[in-house]
Structures are given as structure tokens and as C-alpha cells.
Length: 152
Image 1 (tube, one colour):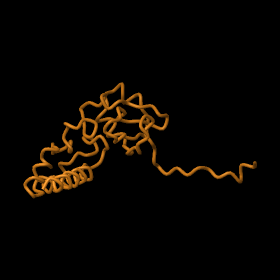
Image 2: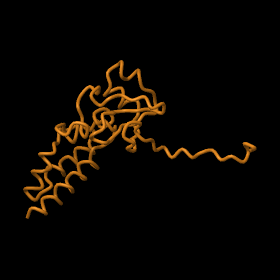
Image 3: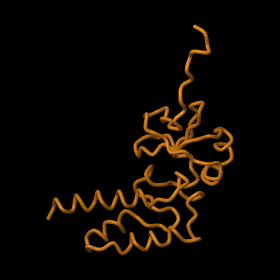
Image 4: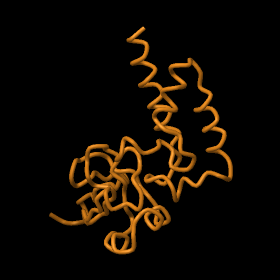
């Protein structure tokens, strides 16, 4: 067939983890530089993606399906380590969110929201996804709130 009539596939920018198939979160070089030790950083190219699936051992992967295990990150990060803070910048934990739910407030979550908009936030270099954790914090809050309702 004449190549003039063959359509090139669209690049949607979405890339799946080569291990688990989860949709990867694109990350920039500054995030990789901050969270990967030298030898691991040298082993992965840009563009790269973070695998957000908690049970997958892949941390980052690239277009060539090279991957860096989450265990190779310079520090353990949520969601790969459920005991790590939800917010790498300010240390908000799952326990903090659960306390807000128990108390019927959003004190800690609101404080984090305010801080996440400040110059103190270092999401690009602290978060494994290179972006704000607020979506994950809100998702966790809603999940805990729903499960708490079921107990009452």
C-alpha cells in the first residue's frame, strides 16, 4: 500500500507501565534528578513516567520500557510505600487525614491545601509524580469518609 494513505498512530501522551499496565504519570527531568540516585538516573531517558499503582514494583519507566524499581528511589514515597506521607513536601500522613475524618473536620487537609499553593511547596522535586499531592489527598479523604459512614 502507498504510504501516502497510511495514517500514523496518534500519540495521546498516555503510556502504560511495562510491568502492570497502569497508565503512567508523566514526570520531568527535575523530578527524576531529585528522586533517583546517579546510576538509576543514568539508566532512564526522558520522557519518563511514574507508575502510580501501589503494588507494582516499578517506580519510573521510559519509552524503551526501561524501568527503575520504586525501591531505588532516594526515599520511599506514597503510594509505593503506604507508610510514607501522602505529602512529601509537608509530611501530611494517612493518619492525619483519618483524624480529620474522625473529628468531622478538614483542618489538616485545608492547611495542606493552603501550604501547597505557597512558595514552600516543592512538588516537582519531592513528589514522585512531580506534581501536587492534593488530588491524592482528596481522593484518600473521600475514600476514608465513605468507609467511616459505613461504620456509623
